[in-house]
Structure formats: C-alpha cells, structure tokens
Image (cartoon, helix red, strand yellow):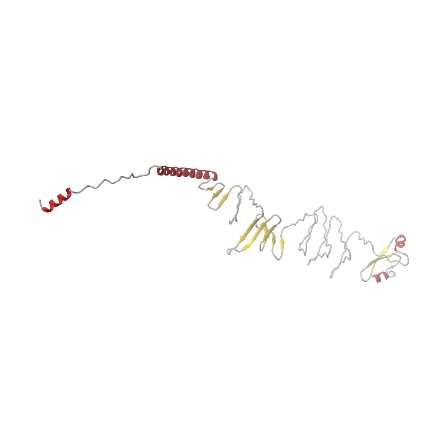
Length: 298
C-alpha cells in the first residue's frame, strides 16, 4: 500500500458522522385541512346551485334552438307571439301581424312612428297621442284597399279628394274657411240642402254654368239685403206654371195702399227703367205711366 493510500485510510477512520436532522411532516393537517375541505364543499354546492338556476331559467324562458319563448328567430326576421313590451325605441324595417289576428300598438303616453332617410334625417312622422293624431310629412296619401286608386291626398298647397262621394253626417254640416271646388253638391234623399254664409257673401261660379235644381221639393233663396240675378251676355229665364212675386210695392192715385187692396182685385205689373217692379191698378188701359212716380223713390 502506498503512503498516500495509508494516510487517506487513517483519516477516514477518525471522521465522525453528523447527527440526524429533525424530520418535518409534509401535507395539510389540522384546521388547514378542515378549511380546505369546507371551501371545496362550498364550491361544489355553488356549482350545483348555478347549474340548477341555469336549467330553471332555460325552462322558464323557453330557450330553444329557434329562439326564446314567444320570440322566434326566422330567416326573414323575428316573430313575436302574444303581448310584447319595448322599453326603448324599436328600429325595424317592417311590422306585420298574422293573417288571422290584429296588430295592436299601445302605449301609456303616445305611439310615434318615424321614417328617416339614409342620412338619418326625419322625413315622416306619425304620432298617436291622447289628444290628437298628428302626421308630419311632405305628402299625405290615402289609397284604396288594393293600393291602386288614390282616395285622398294633402300637401302644403292643396287637399284633393278623388272619391265618388263625400258625405258629411254632422248636425251642423261642414264649415269651409275658403273656397271649395267640386262638380256636385247634393243632399240625401230625405234631407235638405242648405248653403249659407252667415257673415259674408256666398258665391257660386262655373265657366260653363251653374245649375241649382230641386226635382221633388221647393227651392228657396233668401238674403237679408238685396238678391241680385245678373247675366252679362245671356238672359234670365223663369219657367214655371205659376210665378208669384209677393210684397211688391203698390202705386195708387190718392187712396192709401190698404184701401186700394180692398177695392182693387186685379193689378198689372210695371217695371221702372232701373229694373224695379211695382204694381199698378188694372184698368181698361195701362196705368203704369201714371203710377211711375214710384220709380223716383228707387
């Protein structure tokens, strides 16, 4: 054995082994373990409750592949069955009801329908309020059920009605603040037709003539002041079996009109140059010239 090997062997004999260190257990014990189990149990209960609530919500709201409850998602839009409530504005392209049911739009205050252009500007508005129905647009049109015939149209300049008959059933009739253009004004078979202007004049004009007729009843034209019949180029024709002119002024010689009416039974009708008509007692010859002094009063 060499010297170096001997020295190493002798040193290893005298080495002392170190003492054993303290042994620490690995893991959770005591209250830490109990808390961990408690939190795991609480998490499991929470997951079960959330799963139960999710299943309950799906069942109550009727979630399905097609939609949710009364709300069904279609390829061409959304279908709602029953009563639906919208708390915020609704933007749609078309609202259509079922063929066998009505479409009802309700609100506690008002229902407003707006139409906008591509730039977002308001072009038309229809408001159904508690006091009135307001429509704001450039042109308002009402068409027939097939959509082909125009029945009513209104804009800033005029209002046009193209129906064959316009009927007013109010007890006070219809009041027009300005002129009215129509080819015919006719009352019902069992009612009277009355044209009246309480504070202004009543004018009827037509380029080819105005016809006022009452085939089955009397025709009455009255005025507070003068009643004027004027024809610029033609004539005024009174064609009837009997033409009666009442309350005409009476011209006499010396007797009063009351005495003359008691004694005279026949009169002749005289006309002044101004057009005034008066009566004169009928005799063997005309007395209009003698009674012409009444023309001086006109």
